[in-house]
Image 1 (cartoon, rainbow, N blue to C red):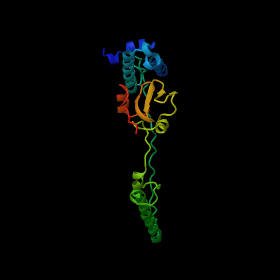
Image 2: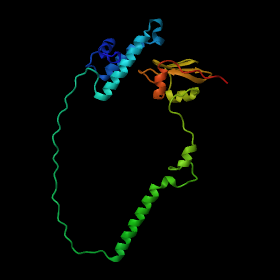
Image 3: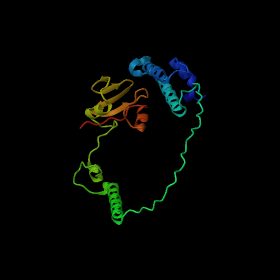
Image 4: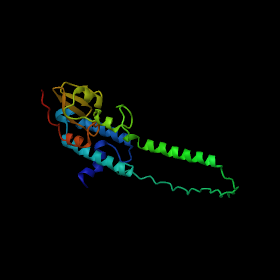
Length: 223
């Protein structure tokens, strides 16, 4: 059995069985991470054991996403659905009474159809009509120059930007903010690196979170 799929040892590590619920599984994982993490236990921490537990946890969550259950949990048989019977109403015969609208009415109907088609065409091509109002909806030229606020943590961000994205830290120091098992490092008031733990991930890109799990990013220079 692969080390990343040894779910039996993972359940033994967490003190659970395969029939536990998802809430109990996540809670036991967080408690175990806190006991193995170097920031909370110091020299008593077990970093290789923590890294192996993180890999098993990610594999178990991927298994749950694909199969809808935790690894080793019994499958619940689905009840077959009874075929749905639809009642089809008999078609009613349409009688031709020989009525034909007058010429003036046909003209109004034709003008109404042309007006509806014109309004639809104007609405469909609304985004290509230029406007002087930079806040008008559909103005693609104005939307291009308007600044966009970042939604994910990036190197070089200041303290206010990081706080708006991540929220208030659980523990705050001049050089490091702690978010449970995750943290963010600062130097000269700028973000220089972070660690995004799977138990409480930070708002960073998927690739950045994977790289940061191996160690802090590079430091920014003061100037």
